[in-house]
Image (tube, rainbow, N blue to C red; front, top):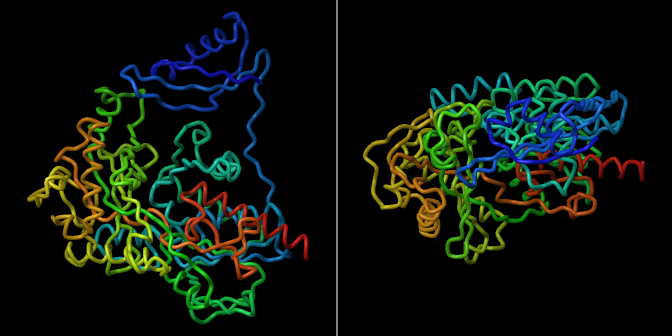
Length: 518
């Protein structure tokens, strides 16, 4: 097998005959040679007006390419040693799958509902503004990623086998293109069935997944957890506990702190979510090229430094929708998602400012200092927008010019928006940096700063504002020897793939410990 890379136009990248001839030419083969080829990687280079596709292919000459294996060996674990997992997000589910591979029995407790039941609660939230604090965009089977996009891009390639995670998703129903695209994406419309298939596999092999089962207490015996309490009533003895509860399980941080299990304040980012028309973003990114069958809806990635602090785009959603992602009834939170085709008429992205514990003088050592600030902003937004699930909004240019918006062009945020000046919500060190950042971004994408764009507040759940310290070698908590803080909620991941990798690694550490000590 050989690999061959070259650039071509978007039209050529979809022309099989062109690609076949081009590969033969690159390999100095005659046009009558027999080759078999398939995509390995594909990305867009739109830096210049003459847009190119970066192509990498796997090629065999005079023989067929071997099939790509998407098969995995999951063992029957009904009578195996148990590992308890709190949380059925990507970290918890992939930890459970890898437990099956290694011959361990995963027992998963998820505070939220299964994906089908969860969908009904999200419909009620979007249409009626009624929030279920245990079943929402953050809590429930599959975690925050299930109904907020399923982006699979990660920079964490040194942490683990990204391709193996992607192949496992293909095994459970994702499109093979996620192995090819530079920024792979499953889509909120497709993820629920994939998550359901994962659950069915875990159960069929003897693992367990329990829904509407919330961790409510931890009982310690010295430096070990002896048992856990679920729903204030049921107790379960445990040997190894993976804590994969995500960035929004604030009560879990409080539970750890109450039990003198160390947690620390952690930097995160907070700001607004800006919505443009997708047509405008396509025009800016593709140099005026519109309504194109050869290019996907355009994305962007923007970053700047303002007064020594990073301000950047986060979770950019081409052809997307802004969603209500609060987890408590007295707060509002925004996030974004896209369907697999990314075919909605609007694009949205978080634009966020880095926040550090040192920003709060005299409170730097309080583990809850960043979390308290996050809560404060979310609750102020809830109050300012009418004490419901509407969110504060302002036209983008009005925000930059410190002017209240009297009307809006549109918003994809279903519960609704309310005209509020962002200066009444955010502290000066946030709004000043956001204003300058939008001006900087307009220099990089001329036309980005427009009053046809609308900012929604807040974008606040970018990552956990608290970390749970663990030993870098064993992945155990630095004091509690059978607790494995995992993934995004503990401060060790930043998305679906990196969380899945961290879940896999936690299981590997546990398996090694069990093998060594029985």
